[in-house]
Length: 70
Image 1 (cartoon, rainbow, N blue to C red):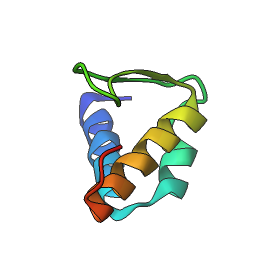
Image 2 (cartoon, rainbow, N blue to C red):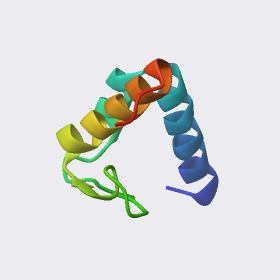
Image 3 (cartoon, rainbow, N blue to C red):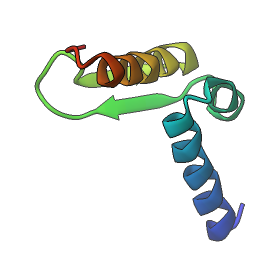
């Protein structure tokens, strides 16, 4: 994949996250994805596997919508 194509996939991924399009994310994240959330708080750490990463994303969105802490 060329750099421009890579950038477009990343851009689309952010758009999907903002829109809550978990179906798109589920189709495009590798099953063994690792997502690192930096910091020293309850949500910091590594999330391994598509299910865990999507769960982290869902909790992140839910926390922002409700104004509650994760």
